[in-house]
Length: 314
Image (cartoon, rainbow, N blue to C red; front, side, top):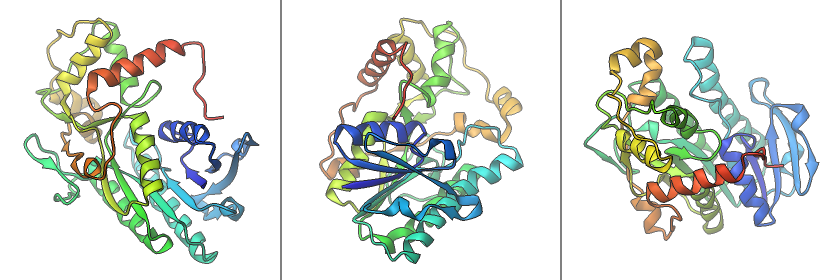
């Protein structure tokens, strides 16, 4: 296998490349920063600028597998400018890959694309499977829906196209825990609104293993990339507190105040999606971390073991 990765310098991308290196896979990656176009230890970077329709075609030389993760961070303030970047970074990058593959008449053995569980409607009662109703009622849902439709067009470039609707990614650096952990450490941990919002999560190592399982077995279709045991937001906060030996006792923060300060973006915290892992389990995927507490124990242990080290895929 020779792998091309987009979004390689992001949270998921770095972990994915770490797993690829452990498997001794040769790696190409695309970056929008020319200074990151390194070539060492089996990893080679290539420049692209999807906004300007620019790409170094040589990134595809010898490559038979594509994992497409690239997209601007959705946690930044949702100003009109940032909204445009969040949407266009996903659509333009995917279109550029497809156009380049078409122009060069390249067929990949496997293509895996990232998506998000934000495509599902908010609900405290429904359990979302891959064939559940989708929604375009808010900005996040519109972005994830448009991104997924663009990714599906890559099916003509590989018989084995898989799209993963990714839940909350738990990792030692970055991701949701980087926002939730500091308040808990300082005895300020609390949930928002009722705290009953469902949080469908996945340990980052399981997510990388899932991508490689799809590549190895040439999966085709759309899959929920979540652990099989979602949890309510308040219980997520309490489990973080238990792992860090910190009590969580403060009253919940009102949804009104959150909406006042965050506006439309508050749905990232107030949203509730209970998402099923039934399909990937049926395909024989085994989670190393199906339950939250062992996942948190592993992540915080790794964090403590690497306090003096800088996380890097290089």
